[in-house]
Image (cartoon, rainbow, N blue to C red):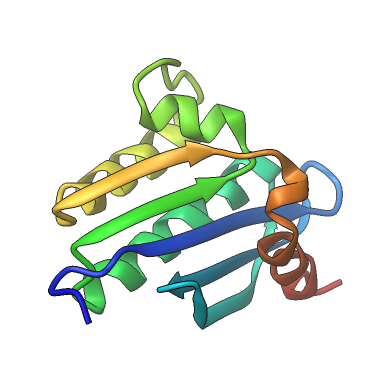
Length: 134
């Protein structure tokens, strides 16, 4: 096994209504194998807040488990472009979440946050939808 294996973390947040009951889904893979998943209700919030909470939860998992080399995949163009510095964070609620995510990103040696189409993020979306509690 590699000293610093590559982990793929797929994240998604979902809200039924905007705001509405929301959930997050995270799928963690290593060497092409699914090794961990998270599906959790996060109460009533907006879709963008749910997306950030999914990102933060995935990053916390990575930091806690000593992941040094990862690619994080999200179908939220807004979140990915904000993390990449291509979009500014204007929403006051998202600024705090953005700062928390950036703080966690700094704790991972090699990390890339990548935008993918929704069709490539189906499992994380399913986990997020399952997490919604009505």
